[in-house]
Image (cartoon, helix red, strand yellow):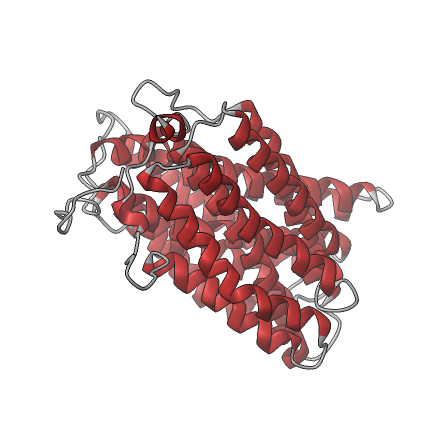
Length: 410
């Protein structure tokens, strides 16, 4: 009886595959949190090249904390019924913790370190423990217990770093490495073994939609940056052109993402022999695509604010580097869905890299315009290849492998 009551939390074949309004509500926090990431990057651009690189690395650390929280919450709602009260409590509680992370993120490595660390530890430890209690005697309760145990291993490092400014960065790097290593290895424990993500039974349509939504969240953050930056300036023709180009690039990123692999992720997950393996790979790819979009948003703000200043090398890291990172990750995504390498995207990536030295000598808006032209050519190449051809189906080479002994974990 206890096992049956715990099993009521699990998704079934009749569960809706679409994301729920609760999850969309949860995502609102991440629109805000991602703006804090880009703002921290902007604030760190005043300094030497070494100082800028160091600040980018620190901001990346904080972003990966947000990504860990969002990703694990997505897997929770893909494995458990989001309409159950316990799961709703978990998601809303995680939402509040994520809001605290977003609020404290701009100064998380300075005076707001303790609330940042406390919020993260509370989410990472409390969420799986609450789910394990709700599962009661069900065999799957061992999965959240593994997650809670690994979060407990890293928690002292997060809290020690928050209390000790000197070794804070080093302690948090190690703590985050422990958290990500646990995810990679399946949170192994003595006698209990591991529970690899790739062996989980997942709701493919749901996961696909959630990955699409986190990419749209990143695009939404870009739109917010474009609008806030331009509305905060005196209206001028120069800034208006940069504003318009920034919007065009954002629209092109949307087009390149969704055509056609972005539309077929659900189909690929549905037909994969081991959908967890493909979902695990897609999660990593979306991490880099989202980073590329955030980097591009930082570039928009710089160019709208200084359209005719000569493009500095540290500016080009974002103006050119953000779209380049997106194209590189999008090329991998093409392989995940179709089993091929996207030549137009690789050509666009190569062109961005080759143009980089020349763009150092031109106004920032010219560099932004060159990025827009190259992305437009990639989008045009996609459309041209599809002319008079039937729509493709997914042919993912990932997830075809046979599972090891024991099969998938329910």
